[in-house]
Length: 392
Image: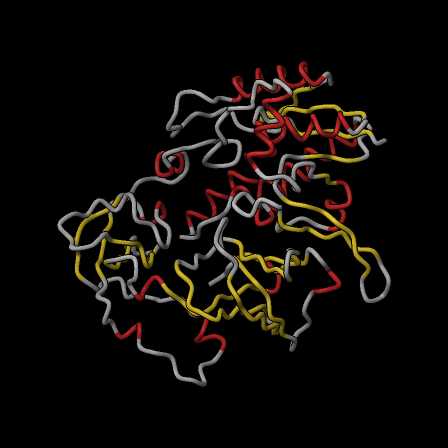
């Protein structure tokens, strides 16, 4: 049996992960991470890290494993939160959960776990790991979807490397959420009925503009309404180039009808509905574009406004990440995949086309709210093989 360090968060998923490893006979140690202290913008007064720490200790005592507390808040601020601020200031929308897994849980945390003598590091993610032989006979680790399709979290791990996967264990990946809660209840774990965490990884549920105002200052600007019959939405020709297929809709700062004001374009993201605060419309308004330099937010009326949809996206070559290096595309190659551009989005059929400058992802059907700064992940059947930051 192996020496395994489990990231105990005070939630039911990591609790059951630790319990299962203990039952399997492994030498298990729990480590609780403190990654964030600031409560600026918090929407709830409870669920601070102190509450999580108390529950994690209670779980460890119930299971019969030692637990340690470590503070990674400096690394988290520098490698996750500062990146968030930087991206939002540019009008892009980052995904802190993906970054947290890449930079903290499977990097900073793993390094500390190895110092404690860990052979493996386990988490409560709903995904699975396997091994396969590449074309040259080399063994590769596979990142597979979780059995519970509604809870599958492989997307959040889309930036992991082969080295990180080699050390990773996902004990609950072959279980569905009701089974996890049943196991926790039968074992008398204090987290059995605890609600799942929401919001930003380790920060929690926050009012995003208030949170971002720690570094990004409010600035009054115009909200413009773009009609659905705008020339921007003219059908593309059958011989449209890859650049044309992946080009985001771009609007002139004076274009459209002024319908209201906002407090900072950098606080908005494509596809956003809440927070626009413009009434009197037949249908809700959605953000369809942002002009950071002129501080303008462009909106469209209705969830089916053509400004919300695009046929493809582009990922720069330096932002391409191959979870399976042996399946990475070379310039000139293409591949049919299933892809998603956000967590819990149903997989979408698409074609990856590799060029010198990067990857073009062309979907079979136009996709809603493709957003720069987010991650696109692509799959072959149940395996996540690659990902990248959406440039446009």
